[in-house]
Image 1 (tube, rainbow, N blue to C red):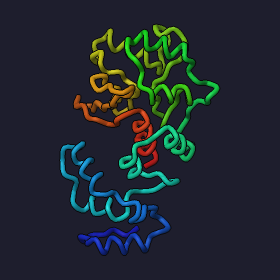
Image 2 (image 1 turned 180 degrees about the vertical axis):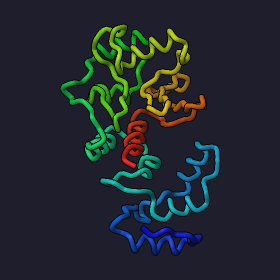
Image 3 (image 1 turned 120 degrees about the vertical axis):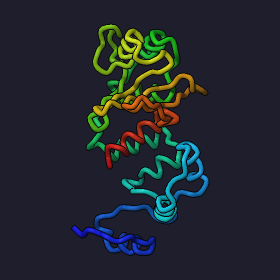
Amino acid sequence: MTTIMVSLAAAEVEQLVAAHQSAINFGLPSDAVNDEWLMRAEDKLNCELPRLYKWFLKLCAERGGEGYGAHQIVSTPLTATGVEELIAAHQSIINFGLSSDAVEDEWLANAENALNRKLPESYKWFLKRYAGGEVGGEEIYSIYGIPFESANGGDIVFHHLMNRKAGLLDDSKLVISETDLGEVFFFDYMNFKDGECSIYLRLPSGEHILYAENFYEFLGKRIVAHDS
């Protein structure tokens, strides 16, 4: 492996990329992130992206993979069809149920009654299409279809009832997944609109940051994160 000890110019990086195509899978200039999406990303992050990183995004977008890379997740709002394609292309890191395992409407209604709120439409699509499962070994909370008080495991209602009882999160936050690093992903019902709910990430430091606009985007980002 070659260790580069000098500062590289953009042209030199392009030459390195061209010389190592067998190990690189980048997008094309036609896939590049445009200025509008760079500005939207900076607005969301509340900071300016590094100049050379923006050069990279505008030159060759992001790492590809079966037609989907991190660039596409950021710049194109995901739909149910897009998520299905991502899932089909990343079966090695995904363990979801089948349509035959789907959460029935009765249990969706029971969950909404127990939580005293409507579940986001994109999340209900996931429950009715895949029931639940894991991405990269991390469970995405679902509905087990048994009495919530005794469900335990990754039942979203059970966890919310326990979190509410223990005062771990206020009632407007509905946890959907946790990592071994102490990160917590949750629906923030202060941002529920038109049947969808933003998803925030609580860092181990306690800071909350916006992670995804809806559950489709959340799934896409978790798949990309574990495919890195």
